[in-house]
Image (cartoon, rainbow, N blue to C red; front, side, top):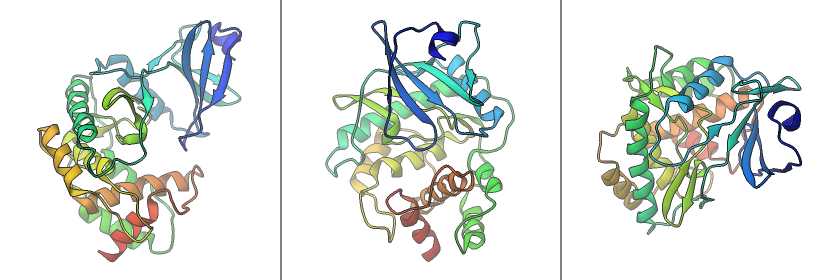
Length: 278
């Protein structure tokens, strides 16, 4: 495919181990580095188009994936019935899975970058569409016992309306690349969505300040949260339970599509249990 559709010969292709939804590979060829991503089967065309639209118009505050067109000028390739994107590899190194409780520099840098990204995303043309988290609620059809009660709880927690601009949609440590303690790249715009920047900022704060713990409930570090909140320097919405609702929705939707299993250690059950007890 790389040779035929992109004109890339003699490539070395290595799977990227992290990441659960789309299969991704590092491609080295002719002194250049790329990331090849194969979409999951049945990925909606609208989701693919949204990501391509945002990346085409975004003037980012740091490095982001840039789509490499095919020889025919297409934004993606189709092979074996799956959509494939080839990106110029973004600059930086994978960071920690969790931040230490004293790692205020990293959380401040990550939230400063998010504030810059939100300003850049606000300039990207944005038409009407379903709201970011409300749309996820509407798409859930199945889940563990008690899912209807938890979804009802989530509906009560979410904001009644969301102001509309483009959002990253999945801003957390796994989608940031680092040079030292500085975010040098933001990756994985697969979940771009229309919604409230203030709500995404709130969800990002909890994602960045969450701590490794057991499966009984969600745990975050207040000091990291406060440091990140100050660095964002804008409106923030949502509390820890709204974050738990957000995590539950992501995991239920992925499980419903057959992409993930709801196993221990993926962050689902701590949030589910926190919501259930509340």
